[in-house]
Length: 268
Length: 325
Ligand SMILES: Nc1ncnc2c1ncn2[C@@H]1O[C@H](COP(=O)(O)OP(=O)(O)OP(=O)(O)O)[C@@H](O)[C@H]1O
Ligand SMILES: [Mg+2]
Image (cartoon, rainbow over all chains, first blue to last red; front, side):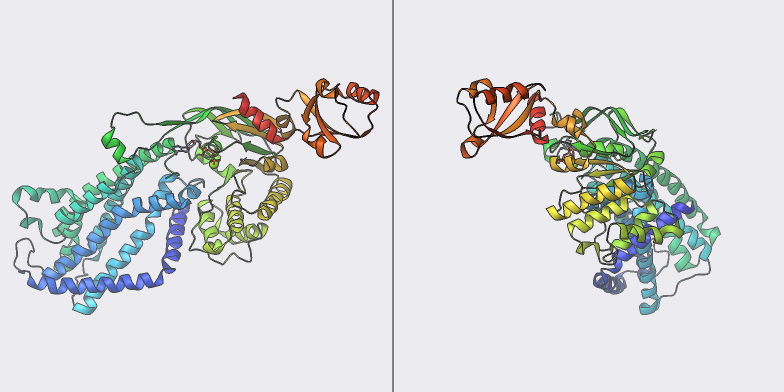
């Protein structure tokens, strides 16, 4: 366990060191983030605060959280497969896989930095909104919020491992990534509540973890809801996590085995 | 001495990846299959430098990848130090792989940062890590450059870093895939010395070295296997392989003249040499041909100034093995 944690940490350190070497890119990214934040601030002024599904939340705040978490889920979808593919090209995947570290752990840890970095950017986003636009968040139900975030993290890891497995297995994964992130953006209640959709489509949202993540996070941060009010949302998120995470881990094992048989794991 | 590596009837077929375009337009055409290994048997002893010699596409890399658990064989099995390669956790601590590909590192990080990262993956205990890395960097003569970005290194330096990395966990067996491929002659020479003196001589590592360089195999390896089209054609000491398929011995004679009628009696290998000098090469079958030939020449009144046996070269053996296909 300690060994696994040490390895995970080594991946984070490695990628942090690489990230630091792109200092200018980093600063520009942050700058770009705040510009888009500003754009959404003015855009959401045109939205009717009483629109169905907003539940009385301020449209800007509502969308702010949607954007931050959508970023998190899209990171998950891309991080594993993109990392695996680029390390495959660089030849570093092979170098890692001859070490006494299991393939699963290598793939899993490869995205550790992307998750950390995405989390950092979410914080920056929210911090920026608080600082610049004076938005205040409810933090009194922090443990519930934390639980929601951990479940969000785990379910997005599950999704990411699933998409990485598809890529390893079929060696072409971009259509799947594209589809999944499109679904997340459209049905994930990021830009508009599910209630705005035609009735027959509304149910789709219920199958996406991001929908429940956002219900928890918006409820806790914007409306100050506690465990009692959020428990059914948390339960739904937990169920999806319990399906996605083991499925992702299991399928990645199958995909890794097939890739080793085909020799495609280390040769692009 | 025990066996470091054993391979039994290893087979590996690869299916060439088909593009989307092919899948769309010829969905029922069979995919092309490459037989990379077709029943490879090998025994490599502890402590030897064993050469895997073969032309491009012979299957050298595939074999090394199977031995390092990166690729699963279709048929047959291999063991490393007695452990089957299917038990990764037992095999991986025993092997270090030196890649032919000089990428395989993080170019934006320094040599030391790279080594730090990989040392965790190789489970070097935390308290020993810095010491071990310093020791290895010094060993491969990279201690001065260790804090420069990897991207700045020359090919020779990258290759030495690759060796240092493969030794992080001090494995008894090193698998090297064409380590001198991208090096200039001087760098290649010093790397070969290092392999021979340090890795083999001092550290007593078992080394499996894939190469298509005959000269290199000749210089370094105690035994070699000639791999062609996925099969081991010959195994033995360099001397044995060199003489493979030769039932003649070749001599170079230095004479004052070459009697005209002698040409029909002996197997003259080169008469071009005769024309410009006083030397001629002759092939004699068996071990006992030399005396009668010398007696004949003396009888003809020829002055013999010198007579040397000419080594059969590996190149010739290679050509004969190819011919025998
Ligand atoms: N993952 C793979 N997918 C498809 N074909 C492969 C794969 N790996 C190797 N091959 C094929 O298998 C054959 C043997 O390749 P291998 O790389 O083992 O040869 P090699 O002896 O190392 O050659 P070289 O001297 O060029 O490095 C080649 O025809 C190669 O194209
Ligand atoms: Mg090769």
